[in-house]
Length: 255
Image 1 (cartoon, rainbow, N blue to C red):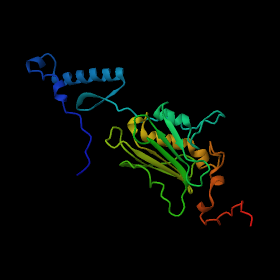
Image 2 (image 1 turned 90 degrees about the vertical axis):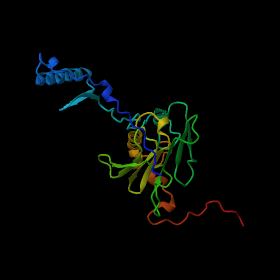
Image 3 (image 1 turned 135 degrees about the vertical axis):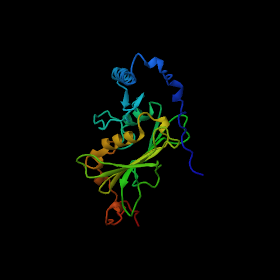
Image 4 (image 1 turned 180 degrees about the horizontal axis):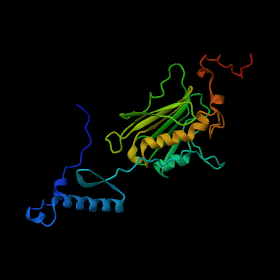
C-alpha cells in the first residue's frame, strides 16, 4: 500500500465569508468602489500586522509561512572549556537541539574505525542523533547506516572544496527523520536525526549548520576538537588510496 499521507486541513473557509450584499445595498456605493474599499482596508490591516499577503482577485489574507531555522551555531566553540564528548561535535550544539537532559555516547577515541556519536533522550526507545566521520576507501558508502528522508537536496559552502547531500523529511511529516553527508576529498562527516519531534529547530538546517561548524577540521586540516589530531594524522594505514603495509607490532614476546 502507498504510504499514508499527512492529513490536510478541512476546507472550512466558506464559513467565514461575509454575506453577499443585495442590489439595494450596493446602491449607495458602486461595485468597483466596494472592491477597492475592501482591498484598501485589507492592505492596511496587512501592513499593520506585517504577516499576510494579498494577491489580485483574492480578498482573503493568509499568514506567511515561518522560515526554516537552525538552533545550532555555524561556528564551533574554541575556548579551552568547550566540551566535546564526541570528537568534532560540540556538546553545546547537541544540547541546543535536544535539551539539557540527554546522554551523549561516543565510541572509543583510540579505535581505528570511524569515530561514532549517539544522543539518547529520555522517553525515546532509540538514539535520536547519530554521527560519524572517517574516510572513503574501498567504495565505502557513508549512507549505509543512515536514515534517509524523502526530500533530497545538495548544499555547499563558499570557499570550501566539497559537497553535501541531504535526505530529509518535511516538517510535520509522518516520517520525521533524515541525514546529511558532506565530503571533502575522501574525508566525510555523516549525521542522522531519527526523531525530529524530539529536536528544536529545523532538521535540515540544524544538520547543515552543524556541518559548517565542522569545516575547519573536516576540510581545512585543523585539529579535530576532542581528538587533537587532524584528519590526516588520524588516517589509518588502510584508508589511503593505495593502502600502506600493515604496521608491525612494537611489542613482541621474547623467544
